[in-house]
Structures are given as C-alpha cells and as structure tokens.
Figure 1 (cartoon, rainbow, N blue to C red):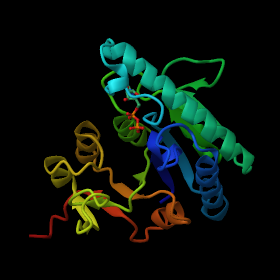
Figure 2 (cartoon, rainbow, N blue to C red):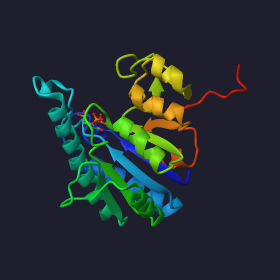
Figure 3 (cartoon, protein in one colour):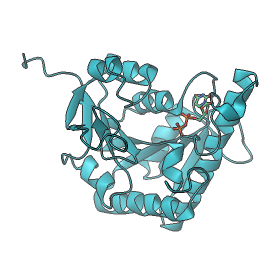
Figure 4 (cartoon, protein in one colour):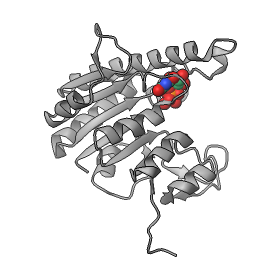
Amino acid sequence: MKRVLLKLSGEAFSDPEVKGGIDPKIVAQVAREIGELKAADGTEIGVVVGGGNIFRGNSPAAAGMDRSSADHMGMLATVMNALALQDAIEKVGVDTRVQTAVDMSALAEPYIRRRAVRHLEKGRVVIFAAGLGAPYFTTDTTAAQRALEIDADAILKGTQVDGVYDADPRTHPDATRYEELDFLSAINQRLGVMDATAISLCMDNDLPIVVFELLRSGNIMRVVRGEAVGTLVHAPDPTDD
Ligand code: UDP
C-alpha cells in the first residue's frame, strides 16, 4: 500500500486497564510505529482519530444534553487526541499537520482536501480531527470519507483485539476470528467492524478495511506490506460461489 488511512479510536489512546484518558506511553508507541513505517517504506499516512476515551455525544455522560451540542463536545475530544498524537509523531522526527473539520486556526489547519494531499506527497503525516464537523456522525464514517477523498488504498482500523470475531473474544473464549469478510456480512451481522454508515460508504466505493491489533509491535507495517494480519473486510470475489 502506498497511501493509507489509519483509524485510531479514542480507546486506542488509553490504557485498557484504566479505560479513558490519554496514556502517553501508548501514544508514543503508536508514533514510533508510524515513524518506523515512514522510514522503512515511505508510506503516505493519513490518520483519523476518535474521541471516545474522552467524550462521546451518545454516551451516558451526555444524558439530557442536546445531541448536537454533545456531539460538538465529542468532536473537541478528537482534537485533544490529535494534538497528543501530533506531538508524539513529531518527537520521532516525522513532520505532521493536524487538519480540523471545525475551524480552529489557532491550533491547526482547516481541513482542505487538496492541501492534505499535498502534505501527504511531501511525506507529512496528516491527522484529521473533529470528525466530519457534523453531529450524528462518527469518526469511523470520517475515516471512510477522508480515505476516499485522499484516495487511500485502504482503511487500517487499529483496535485492541486482533481482528473481527463472530462474538466478543473478551467474553467468549471460543469466538473465532474472520480472516476475510465481505461488507454486507459485516453490516448485517453487526460484527462491530465500524458503524453501518461507514461500512456502506466503503462498500459503495470498494474501499477495503483491515481491522488489526494496533499495539502488537510491527503490526502497522505488516498490514501495509500486505501480510495476513487481522481481518480484511472487502467486496466478495465474484468468482467465488
Ligand atoms: N462526532 C461527531 N461527528 C463526527 C465525528 C465525531 O459528532 O463526524 C462526535 C460524536 O459525539 C462521537 C465523538 O465525536 O461520539 C467521538 O467520536 P467517536 O465516537 O467516533 O470516537 P471513537 O469511538 O473512535 O473513539
């Protein structure tokens, strides 16, 4: 893969034992892996960050709030994660830009597609923050949208488990992992790959998704090099019956 869109959910930023907040060691590890990939393969990397480790518009913490206001808080949470990641990636010597879908010119550039692509071509990691800038969407849908806009080869969705299972492997020890999955099964079986809006966008535009364990050392590079890591969600092979 030459250009990828890495989706990091907010929970990827926090210690699984602690749940919530930003763990600087984890952010540093992700940054190191991104730096190693850039140095080894020169892969162009866009990143969409979530905010669920801090605030989600549809969570109990927002109970009673107007949903649009709560979602704006969720978007702001993604900006905090983006700034933490930017700092960590720059510490490993890779240039970055944060672009926000909500204008915050004191902190970051506004999202401008052509400018984002130019940054990628120049070797900068572009971190897309504040989601799509619209309530009722998620950062998974943002990942699909931005991946299409920058013409990424795939979405790499880093999670805490090593792929998509037929049941939650943390509570069902006999759950089995899919190596491959087609888009419709992922939507219909509600396998938790991404939300339905995001997967539909990928399906309609034939954009593959690789779900993989983020914090296993070297995994981002393995996925980019096409090794069989995690679960590949894509269009079914028309020659299969
Ligand atoms: N959000 C939004 N519009 C977007 C993206 C995100 O309103 O386009 C808000 C929404 O409240 C969401 C929160 O930002 O709950 C954090 O994003 P998300 O839940 O996708 O984060 P993740 O689950 O990846 O940590």
